[in-house]
Image (tube, rainbow, N blue to C red; front, side, top):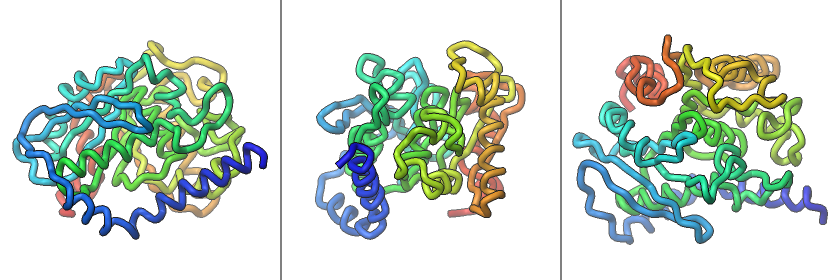
Length: 309
């Protein structure tokens, strides 16, 4: 069996497992109820979770008014400072009434291929899905649910390098996230095979790059939350393929959103991507959390208008 066929079987198996999550939700909840939950206190906390024997640290915050609502998983930027991102997003968690958790992917073990690009490829070869860094998400959620004593809805957000990680998760690793908020990403996955991975679907096995795979991507709940003043070239990828996406982060975000909208219209697909723009803001995360458009980006128009769950 060639490597492409082998990967296709692995990918198909992975997708089948994800598709079966709804069917086993009741059994998962029962299993969680049989394990002791952690006594929860408001404020900051920290714990460890592991995938494939590799542990990572997770920094969290429980708002004083938190009452068992959704979880917000926030992916840090290139600083790899999860504690700092947790501290900077406390007010965001308080505003949203969400349990905040920030996993830390240290630079020593998770290079650009493993973090920003999700660990999908190593030395030009596609790895089995179980080895992708995206797989940490389920281990993290399982530990959160165990600590809380029940399964909870969740939202995913990433800033800068974390948004690059999250957009590739949206493209290649299906989740049950209610929304996936990309905050000022430096590069993205355009819904086309004309650009090679990690900038598009080109050069990947059929299971990852088919029309069905691209359709699933543009029909996923992705939100582009962009600062209109984010035009700095600092730490911006400037290679040939990256520059095809735009000269700045704000251009790249707008261009990717528009490419998805045009493709969905052409193919008569549903289009779930949203665009929220923070006027005048630059790249830093803290001002993005404090901006009036943040609640709209995180929760959507209906929630912004006061609709209930």
